[in-house]
Image 1: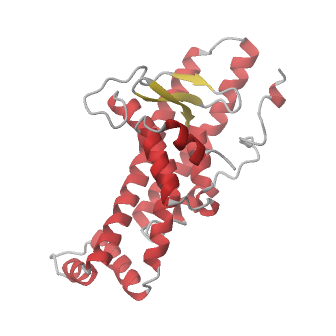
Image 2: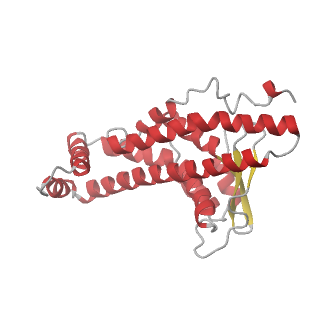
Image 3: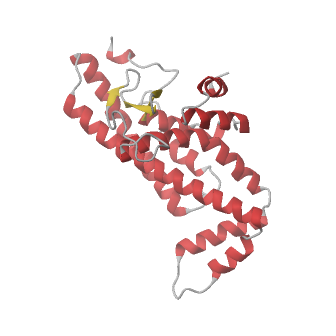
Length: 258
């Protein structure tokens, strides 16, 4: 196989042509993320490391093809960095989703104004985080329809985040997703993806496997968020059942393209 033709351009754009800066833009498009400077900085961190890692992954694949064997030192290095990136991606989306869920709950329970008053109380020093949170509540109060946008963003990110959370449990906790005190089959073991060079890690649910996921795939899912379709409640329910290892046939049908 020629080094210049190892990729499927319909799935992974080469690092030389990919706009890695759009990862940050896509994340900051999420309501309550882009207007928080601290969450935005985390998004920038992810984008910068993504821009550095993508060429390393492609180089790893070139070495695999050229040498016809796994280049162990390089693969271990890429795997280590990939896992750190995955952990950071999970924490950013987890923090944002919790923020969005909390705001939605406050709005539904009529607690936004009370929360705003608590955040505005003088704590004896300038607290930047509290000010940012207060400004977000003010925005929701001024734009009631924004809660519907938050709902759409939560649905749009539900599946990518759930897959990210599942592999994070295997990599970080060495457990099977959603099974406390379980033991993962091969936590941290990855194989070089033959299209982009990222490390493929298996998502297992007990005795079943949901296939593999890699860091590049997660980054592409994030880039696609602004234009991603909003799944229906039935699709989300079927997907969650799939992650639990239940109703696999109906879940797969609901989440399959087309």
